[in-house]
Amino acid sequence: MDVQPIERAATGIYGLDDLLEGGFPRGRTILISGACGTGKSIFCTQFLVKGAIEQGEPGVLVSFDETPHKIRQDMLRFGWNLNALEQKGLFTILDATSARAGAPSEEENALLPGQLDMDKVLIDILTLCRRVGAKRLVIDSIPAMGQQLEREGDIRKTILKLSYILSRAGLTTLITSEIEEQSIGSGRSLTFSKYAVEEYVADGVLLLNFLGIGSSEVRTMYIRKMRGTKHSTNIHPMEINEKGMTVHKIENVFK
Ligand SMILES: Nc1ncnc2c1ncn2[C@@H]1O[C@H](COP(=O)(O)OP(=O)(O)OP(=O)(O)O)[C@@H](O)[C@H]1O
Ligand SMILES: [Mg+2]
Image (cartoon, rainbow, N blue to C red; front, side, top):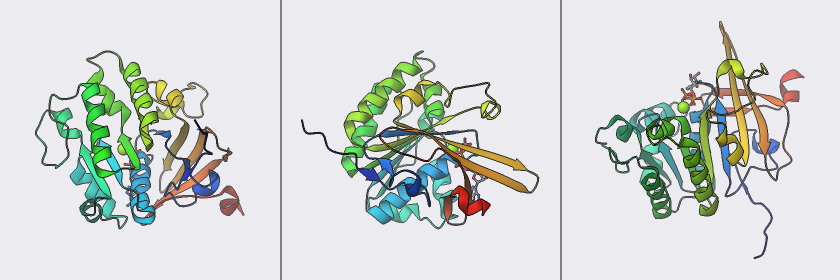
């Protein structure tokens, strides 16, 4: 089989493509990790929204963490009308929160309560992606998905399976995971995700950090790995404002 050079998918995060030779490697899985409130969900939604608006690429957001209603509301703050994109078939939310709560969903696309058998979930996600012609996929978050699976006992095996299936599906996928705040930069922990396996199966790992002290806040982003890519190795200042998320070059901030 012919081997083609890596294609790039624009990340949609202002300033980030320049640090990644033009974007994420297409068809690969990237882990977005960080403590709570570091901007993981905004990052992932922006990747889908900008992919839809600027590249015309349909995206699917599988949300285990936040209800679709809240996501639509929160994203309006950045001027992103998800409803309008959904109507055009460019953005689809798969509601996994109601299934987690064991309640029926009001959403058009939802996992059914009691239907959290992982094989079935994976088939549902891929079927939906195929139906809408998705090029981009987000699974937010692996720990929330894992909470369901604790009963099954083998979360790591499930994540491995997920990554294998995704690697064959050709979708550029972002998954999110959590890292404890105190373990970042302290040298006490060398893992970058909750179950540690996410960072190994992912082709790329981005670490988001947030330090809020009084009225000042510092957000940063660090590319820990990106296979097949000559990427920045700096810790970059990051900003969330009314337009969404921006990553700054270090020289732009300190000059
Ligand atoms: N409109 C906005 N303008 C500026 N900052 C915002 C805005 N909306 C949210 N934020 C910041 O982003 C944070 C939430 O980001 P997000 O939900 O993406 O974090 P997360 O890493 O997914 O968190 P969690 O782990 O709880 O899911 C808020 O706590 C706030 O600091
Ligand atoms: Mg989140």
